[in-house]
Image (cartoon, one colour):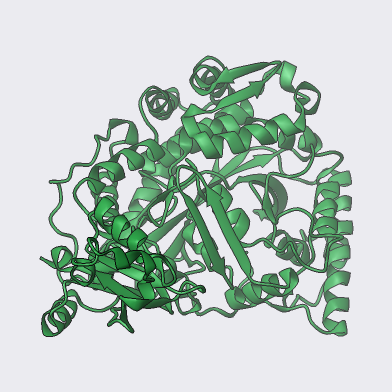
Length: 618
């Protein structure tokens, strides 16, 4: 959402002004399309780099605003959270060494950002989902203090009519409740832009949709959220649910998620596409418009900005988003690829972008009308299969089902080379970046490396420490510059302890076995024996902590027949001492020593979140 000053669509005068400007924008767009004034040559490409900032403990920073001010460079812009920023790269004419030039600019800007971040004891991480993000960093206190973010969050929540429930299931499963759009801030993308010919809009856009699944499969880089292995590209599910406005009273125009793949092949003109979006998705925000409307600007020979249309378009997030813009006073249309994740290196990102652009331009003649070649539901299925399974997916292509590796090597890479050749892209650049894609197809992508490394780290470390080491490893490897296909699995001995003053949350165990207060004492003693548990939290019917049971409490009960008539409520220690995840580990050790305890439950916001034992501290 590029507009910096926004306001809620509340009262009747505001709505009247907004919808007048929206309708005149559409009419102006239709007039421009009919008159053929859109720029088509040379084709331009562009990109946006979203990235995360982490503190010295490799956890989300809260200093993005201060760091952005210190960076003092117009290519850098704020993002939703206090630990995200974005770089807008300069658009370039497609051809020659445009990709390596863009790569050089990206590295230069990231190096500048990193140098400034280090002064704040921060580091830049480029990855689809930061491994160390947890619910504590998704509260409104971590939202960037700009009114436009709060306004958009409130508007989406109001349209929905209730708080949001996030549920993603993969190897593991995660269920979260949230009351704002802050979960959107977990997602960091490398958004690629490609200018298109308005006269061939529908065919071009449909081709972008058709190729999305296979392209995504080799680019996945976000397999985890909060230590859970979910989808190979978890961003796809997470972003969809984080700004979902459904389950509201506005059922007529909120049946599809604002983040999505779409409902059907595109038909008609670009103006028809925008009209469909306006019909399907409620307008949420407005702004202070320039005195002249779009039609008046057209009459004076100016190229209108289409502010209202772009404002609405900025609150709808298809994975392939159609965008209107102006280049040197002439209007253009472009497709914004939003499904490519950040990282794990800039080489990987530029390779992903080149692969997509090459395939877009290398469309075979028999795929000129994709909607006649493939069922839309198969294209959509391909996309979500890629998000779930990455390189392990199989795709509907033509009339066959083809494994990822075969489809990419035998069909998509030749297409990409052909498309880049048509655009006169430097052959050396094409071979370099598409070579990265080819090696990745034959070895590993970012998701596969991350899962293997995290599993290796978990053999020795608890989840918080393993996630910090994984993040540190991402940073170390990313700045060496080698693409992910060359990365070896992270080893346990590579990095020293990542946090000097650990907190309870850094050391506690989150895999907890619990019992209910009305459970049979005999059963619970059996559970403790079977699992070699020495400390067992006891919950009530509303799953709140009400007691604690230690092995010493039940040591002599197992051989007594009376145990079968006892409930745990009768033998547990009531109102136990608890710790908070933010409690310093040294303070927790002192508490255990003073009360002669070997383990304490950890509670946050009245919910049991872990258990800390003396073994965890020493």
